[in-house]
Image (tube, rainbow, N blue to C red; front, top):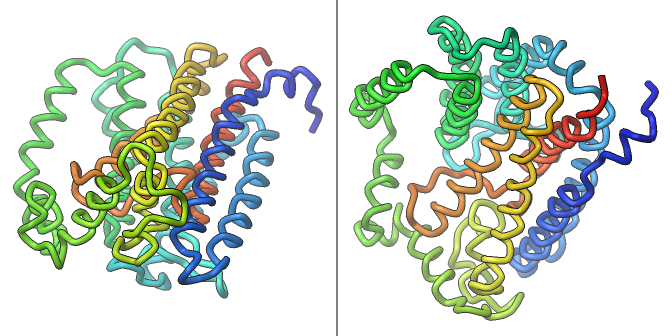
Length: 363
């Protein structure tokens, strides 16, 4: 495989360095949140996951994204097999079975299947160049998305399952949705809402209810939200200083190094630190969204839209649940939260985006 020099000259170093900066900030606060309990175990694991992520990032950068979309049916099939494998052989963590263990290594296949589903949608939706999608095309796109989404729901991971929806919505929207299909989608969503409510498990319904009043169950379902808000509020403008957060250091905040890492950051770095980190996220997303205009073809544009919508949804939901504005859904904060599967899948997505950007002048 021959890559000419112009390809490397078009590499977007700014976006890459923003992602690296966020990852290193995450590692610092993961260490702060876990140093008393694990000494340096989580620190070294996350550094290893970051190294693995950069290797995957480099690999996906060197492969033309068209090659990936052309062979995505193999990737999609393997992804579904892994999701089925999780249902049979998976390990249960925090109430849902979504992990595959290989020795001491635990991976969450659903994180990688999200990226594969985006590639599958790119291949399907990039065919033709019509102004609007037909009803059958929308139905097929929904089918491509719903199969892995339903398998993830069967694992009990409702939060991860929900992340497939904004990807489908954004990608079909940019392809052209007639107003009647938008109306039909809204009406259908409202119609199934009561059924969906009663199909939720009891603790999932309680999470939604306690979002609006966490004091209803302050020692149970509302405990995480209460402790998160206490941590954020106690940080003030400049924070208590790294290693000085009482909620995180004393272990009052559950899942502090994973889903609630943003609460740890805000307590120890304050409002100023939180705004700085959010500024880096928005800068990264602003650059990424700008790549849609420079993409050389419809496939590249859709690929950027799909990954960007996934990252934006993760950011919005995680920060919202940490602030107590959204029910707790177990969705990690991209690049900051501890976890190899989330970190690697995020860098895979960013690799695909920068792949599109770097190849925009290649024909």
